[in-house]
Image (cartoon, rainbow, N blue to C red; front, side, top):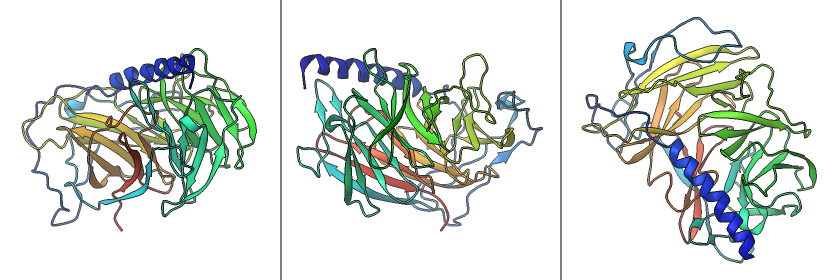
Length: 383
């Protein structure tokens, strides 16, 4: 790789890393009474505690999905014990190297593993092997099924990948002055269109229905465009801020659900809002307590928020220097389980995508090291 290109790599991804650190700052100092002691096993009863749901009139489509009362006026619901309905497995484990069955790793003063990945509806995992300019497709057992070379004229530093409902593969270039936008490919890798770059502060991407979105600061979205190559920040039927084109939340993989975290900062917990429909109506506004083990510290944060094809919600928490996945029923807001995720959300280097939702249920976490990347599946849905 040339010195000029290395400089571009470092400049682009350092910008992403800086913005990501800002996004992961905790929402406020936690100073509440401790919750029940956590264990690594399922609770004896096996039944999760239901969330306190405050019913209220559904807002009109032009109104933002905010709560009507201060969070301090609400009772925060306890989350299930760690290990409730837990499902976890290593899906893919890949080493770094020059081999066809290996992924590439860039060490240029910083550690840059493969930058993106996406689980598919048919049970595959597609990894964006950024530094080899290709996509690697793994089957349900973790074996390589095939690869797709990216058109070099279309992307400079491929950073994110998403697959829409109609099978279009969207590959987003790393945000930067000299990079491009998003290239649209068919299943064989043939270019079928492109979308312009949105901006330099978008740190992730996803597909919702047949639209492609970019994630801003982990909590809001902007529509990049459709699979026919039409760029747009409009999306009829899903609330968007008319002033800046921003969707104040994340559109679900079903293309019909918007999940967001209340903008209120509260030391005890957080509020999740779910809206749904062609003219979005509030499904629930659920209140949840951070699962501190002892005296709360200033390290409670939400690091990932998504919903699947059924509208079920997945939240990755960082509390007391530990990660856990919380699953919520998409219709009632009731927690269905919680599973621990070992490690830190930022360990192993800087990548564009660290978590991604599985459209049929669950999430995948990329655990990157200097030797390789493993892609781990987590879910907490009752069997």
